[in-house]
Image (tube, protein in one colour):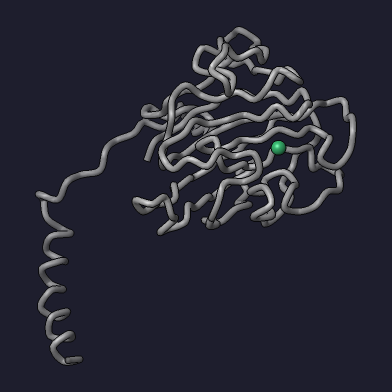
Length: 239
Ligand code: MG
């Protein structure tokens, strides 16, 4: 049996190699990066821009009502969470995706622990990448900035100071479900925080706290946790 397997592998290897170097092999799509010198925050040519500072027309509240967070109203501007108005979600839904989000926690520090600069990026309205002012602010690791909330602490604390702009670059692979809605392959999340790897392809087995229990594509949700956290330059590349 072993020799048969080996014979098969030896026979198959040259064929595979020939295909891989073939002129007929489909070429990968071309995507133009942002302007040089390369700014990794600039949306590439195939990105869906979800917020560019001008308006919240791509967003609603969780209940479908118009979003009441406060946009700066100009290109390159931010939006600010209006505490008590509720979390907001994109009108568009996504499966596997590369997601870029920039955020700033309030420059005037108020509160402590989970009460300081708390928000969150819920992928598919289910899996929260925590947003928190974790600069010299003690809290439980699976709830600090960059945690997959109560599932994975970040590898390091890469937070900038309160009020400074920070970046999340997220690669999300959705869970795979069977017909009964059971997970057959866990979702995976990779996160770079300010360019630093903080979540390395970690498995997610269930929605994080407050996440919905659905199984299909879902929106990106920004959390109202009662703090005036700002967001800007949000874009997605479906994968
Ligand atoms: Mg949060």
